[in-house]
Structures are given as C-alpha cells and as structure tokens.
Length: 385
Image (cartoon, rainbow, N blue to C red; front, side, top):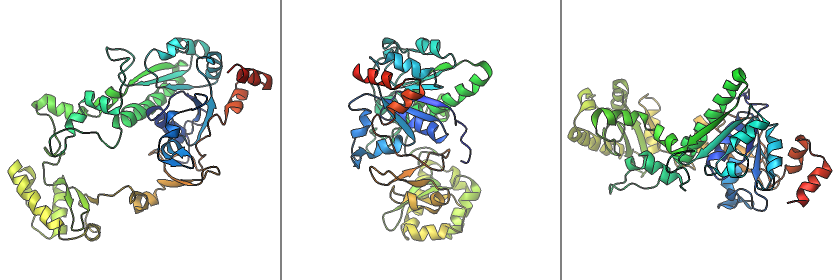
C-alpha cells in the first residue's frame, strides 16, 4: 500500500494480549500512530509468553511492531490519560465492562475532554447483558457463538481451534472496521462515539450464511457433511502419495471438468449433485487417484489446469510460496536489540519500513512531552509513581 489513509490519526491503546493489539496493528499498518499504554513493571502480559526471541515474546514482537510504548499506572495516572486523550483520535481498551468507569476514564469522562474521541471497547460478551462481567477466552466465545459446535473431529466431539477466531476476527478485525467507520462519520458530525464490540457476537456473525441455511432447513452444518463441509467429493482435502495433501475446490461445472481433464478421466456432471452414497463412492475414486503421485507431482500437473486445486502448505512452506513472495507478504524486521525476525504484513499492506516492537516504556518521556509536560512535570510524575 503506497498511501496510508490513517496517517495523522493517533491511537491510545490500553489493551493487552491478542484482540486489542492485533486491532491496533492493523490500524498501524494503515498509518496510525499507536501509543501503547502499559502497566509499569511488567507491561503487557504477552511480553513474556514463550517462545521468546531475544528475551521477548515472538508473538509480542509481531503484534506490536510500529507502535510506541509508555508506562502508566491508570489508577494513579487518570489525569495524565485524560490529557493524552485530548490529543488522540481513538482509544482502544479491552477491560471488563465497568472497569474504565471505576477508573474515572469512562466514555463520558473522555468525551468531556475530547468530543471527537472514538472509544473502542472490546469485550467477550459486550457492555451489557447477563454475561457482561463474566470472564472468558476465545474458546468460550466460539462455544456460545455456535461455531465450536460445528468443528468436530472424527470422534464427533468439538475441540479447540489452532487459530483464535473470536479474538482475531470477532474482536480485532471488526474493531478496526468500527474505528475506521467512526472516524469517517466524524468528518461529517465532528462527534466521536463509543463502539461496544462483543467478540462472541463478532464470531457469531461469521456464521450468517450457515445460520440462514439452518433457519431455512432446520439442519445444522457439520464438518464432513454438506457441500462446503467436506460431504461432496468436489470440495474436499485429499492425501497424496507422500503423505501430503491437496485442497480440491472444484465446485462449479467448469472447474469440475478441468479437474477431470487433468486427471485424464471422463466428466460425470451428474455426480456433482449426487446423494451422500454417490459422493462417498466418487470421493474414494478420487482419493485412489491422488494417492498415485506426490504433492509436488500433482502441483506440476495442475499448473496447466484452472481447476481450483492447491497444495495444503505447512507454516514453514508459506513464506516461500511464489504468490506470497511476489506480493511481499513477508518481510524481515530489523531490531538492533533483539536481532532480525521474519514477519507477515496485514492484508491491507503497511508502511515501506517498519519499526521493531518497543521496549517497555521506551517512548514515555517523548509522548508526555508531546502532551505538553516539561521535564519538571515528568520528574514529578515519576516520583509520584
């Protein structure tokens, strides 16, 4: 991305761990100046989460590049936060509902200082409702959203996903979208707003197509069943000779025909709509064929056929894929203190150069000076804790 649409936007990030920091990472890639507020002493809990790279969590390094860090005790530093908010456009927080109000930093207090301020509150269940103060994690949110119940293993039991969908999609990405929409609306009204974002509802909304089908038929989609769940032979993952896998997504008739042309077998269009028994028979036939060659050999075959067939890559293979390399998805982050690390940009791009994740409180004095504090005032704040 050559232009950074949020250049000049300042964000005060009070969040920690995953949802809030990933949200502000996306906003930083769009050009925002993100000031990360951390607790004195330990900072964001994610800093110490293994695996470590140069003494700092590899995940923290990835989520907090291109941000600045200040340390501030929110209980003692309420006036400092309010003063910083006068110069900010957005505040992001992920405390349980009511915590900011008890700190004297709720939305009413913030907008009294800055009527155009946008406050994004990311929580598990939202700012109201019977579960508003209930603790939870991604697994709990996915469970209540109905998504976890759709992800069942061979034994029929649901299990944790290796990607935190509620945190990242339900919270972070919806949060970034909400912030951009609020900033756009502010251009017309001059007023900010409080965005109440429930990660459970964000995850639930990912199921809108599946819910529509359920409401129409009463049948819940399940893994291994249905057109897009692996129940049809033309949309399935097949093993290859070397124990690798191919993702076959030949849904439309033209791709189904291209698949059969690549395999050197006649096209049976009627099989696309076949009953489960027919799908099982056809799937077994295709599996036997795919097991005759290695994944690399099949990649060479399908390079000449537009059949919606791709290799299932391991994480270690992803950076070297020609598509990702051509689009500069991965880059090396140079950090004089901790050494270089491999990183991935967000889908919307980012600045041409990146700054490493900040040391705890690295930019405290600089940010306070930008807010109008002089050396004596800063020294007094430090002495007061």
